Length: 426
Image (cartoon, rainbow, N blue to C red; front, side):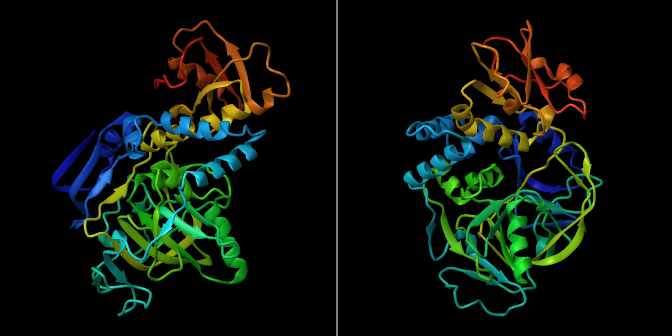
C-alpha cells in the first residue's frame, strides 16, 4: 500500500514519483524532505489515492461501488424525470443522512497559528492549547512544495482545497485549483473562468472588494475528493464530504478571513484575492502529458498560516495517465453512475479510459433491445459498432484511429458480458 522513507530525501527530478504515481503504484511518505537544499519540518505524502484500493480506503468503503449503491437507494425513493431533478433528489437525500456540517470553536488545524504582519491574535481566537509563531518563522518557502517537472514555471501546490463563498448568496464552494508559488507570501490561483471560484471572484470584482479565500491541505481525504467531484451548482462540497464520511464535517472559522474550513485539515493558508490583479502562471506539466502554456491568473495573498502540530503536507503529481488523478476521476464516474443510469436506462456501465485523459472519450456499455432512437443517439454522442472481439479491454489502439481532432465521437467496440472497467493501456 505504501512506502515510508525516513532518511532525508532531496526533491529534484520527479521521475521516481511519476513512476510510483503511474499505474497504481505505492503511496510514498517522506519524513525529511529536502527542498532547494533546505530540510522541511513537515513530511510529504504522495500518491495517497493512486489506486482503486486506496481511493476506496480513503472514502471509508471496501469498494466505491458501495457509495454508488447508497446513491441509488436515495434516487429510488422518488424516481427523477431528468438530471436536474436527480441531483435535487440527491441533495435532499444527503440532508436526510445528517451530513450537514457542524460549526465548532477550535480544531486541530489551528494548533499552531501564525498571523502575518500582525503581532497579536485577533479577538475571535481562543488560546486553548494554541501555539503562536512570529511572522518571521514560517512562510510558503518553508512548506515542502514541489517543482514537479523540469520545465515547470516554479513550485506548485497541487492538492489544495480552495474555499470561497458568494458575497451575495453566502453559498460556499470548495474547488481544486493549482497554485504556483511566486514568493514567500503570494501564489497564482489557477481558477479558469468557468469555475465557481472565478464566478465568486467576478462578484467581488463588480463590488470593488477583496475576496477572502482559505486553502486547506490534507485532513479527511473525503473533502479532497469532494473538491474534485463535478457537483452541480447548489450542492455543497462540504455537505457531499459529510455524505461520503457518513458524519458531519466540523468547521472552524479562520483567523484573518471570514471563511470556515474543516477543523481536521493539516494546513490552512488564509488570504485574499484582489480582483483585477493578474500575473503570468506556468508552464505546468499537466495531466495530458504536455505542458500548459503561460497565461495570466489571479494572485492569492497570504495573511496567515495555521496547521496541526503533526501536520503532513499532501501533494500529487500529474502527467501521462494513468496517475493518481485518474483513480480519483474513475471513482467519480463509479459513484455518480446511478444518476446517469436513472435518466438513461440503456446504460449498463461506463468508464473514462486513461487514454482519453477525461476529455471527449467515454466507453459506455449499453443494452437496447431495439435500435437506438434518433432522438436518443445525440444524447449519448456515440457511434455504436458491433464487433466479435473478445478482448475489448485492448481497444486503445483501435480507438485512437477514430479520435481525430475533427471527430468528437467515440466508437464503442463491445463484446457481450465484458466490463467497462477492464481496460489496459496500449
